[in-house]
Image (cartoon, rainbow, N blue to C red; front, top):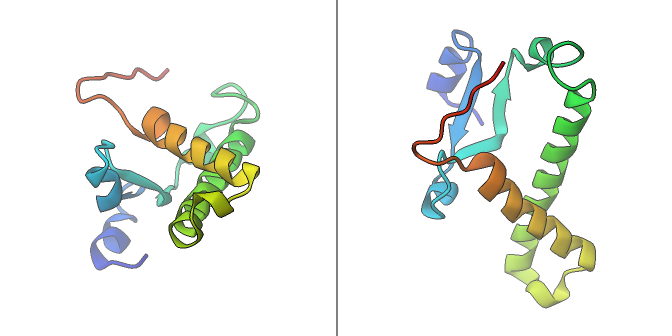
Length: 114
């Protein structure tokens, strides 16, 4: 995704956050599209003595499964759910849970990070 504002401000800020109208339409707030969003500080803020030792690996696996889930969701729109494999259905379930339990946050929910 190229856009002058995120491209310019991405170098001033820590990264780029992309909002997604489809997430907004499904009442997922904040509607952050995690796949094109990026963090320039993540590599220096994770790992031993800060987070889990395998934080980067777990994060990469979550994003990979979410991306596959988005692909399966698009495929489902073309071929229908009955044409999906059991693995495809698991990716769709993961997609739904990831958006509802990971991306979505309550309006008045406060998170504290150490």
